[in-house]
Length: 167
Image (cartoon, rainbow, N blue to C red; front, side, top):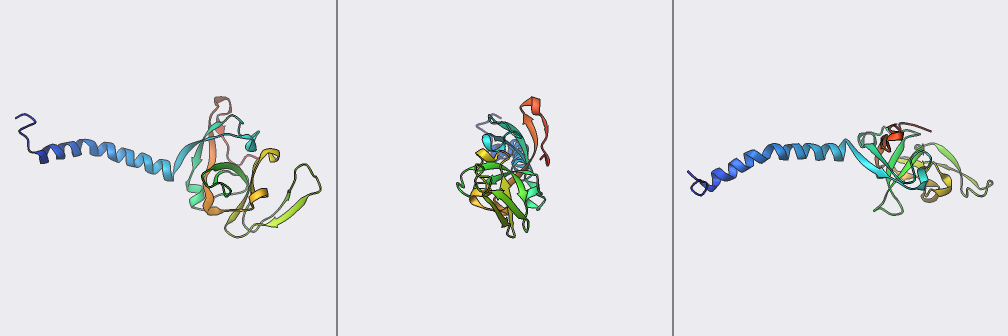
């Protein structure tokens, strides 16, 4: 019996049975990438010297932000409060209830300001305060804007390794 003589229902069932394993694999991969761990490309001057200016390929843990396991010193991806289309990389330097003292103007050593971080927010700053737009500009960030915690650098190979809670 050739293909033109088979009922279409049988052909459709065979096609479905052949593609189902691939669909399952892709669904699992999508779930893992979206909700467990993914990769990201970070670049820019705000996290120099921890992350390079030209860009690093890093692994991002999404579970930590979902279950409140972020702590001081963690490097996080944050949806920018200034431009929601942009995701920025910063270091957590204060948790809810903490008091943070910072220089409002890095060029003026007498321009200190102290704030208390409200509930449900974190204070984020770039490691390079001279080239970073961070909580000193837009204030504490709501916990819901955290996209994930960066924990491992994949590229460049000469810097391959863990980034967990480096200061």
